[in-house]
Length: 165
Picture 1 (cartoon, rainbow, N blue to C red):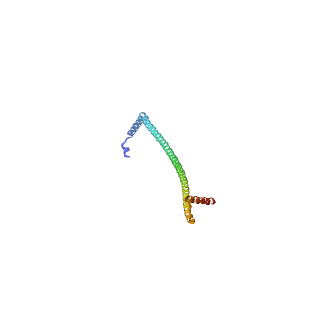
Picture 2 (picture 1 turned 90 degrees about the vertical axis):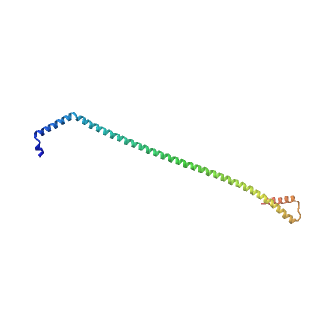
Picture 3 (picture 1 turned 30 degrees about the vertical axis):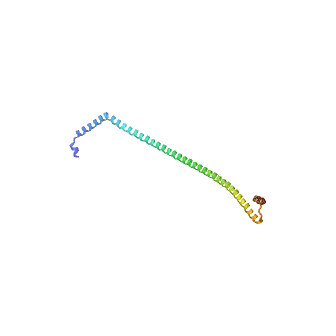
C-alpha cells in the first residue's frame, strides 16, 4: 500500500496512457514483423517435421529392401546348397556304379583265371595219373611195353572212364 501512496493518480494515468500509446505504436510498426517471424518459425518447424517423416519413410523403405535382399541371398544359398548336395549324390552314385563294374570285371577275370588254372591242374593230374598208372601197370605186368604204347593205352582207359561218367 505504501507504494500506491508514492504514486499520484496523474502519474498512474500518464503511465497507462504511455503504455497504451507504446502498445499502439508497437502494434502498428512491429506486430506484423513479429507475427511474420512466428509464422516463418512455424513453417520451418512444419517443414522439418515433413523432412523427418520422409527420412523415416526412406529408412523404412531401405530396411525393407535390405530384408528382401537378405531373403534373396538366403534363398540363393539354399538353392546352391541343394545343387551341391544333388551333385554330390550324383558323383557318389557314379563312383558306386564304377566300383560295381570294376568289381564285376575282377570277379569275371578271377573266374576265367580259375577256370584256366583248373583246366591246367586237371591236365597235370591227368598226366601224373598216366605216369602213375604206367608205373603201377608195369610193376603188375612185369613186362613193359614201349613207353609210347603204355601212354596210349592209359590215355585210352582214362578217356573211357571219363565218357562213362
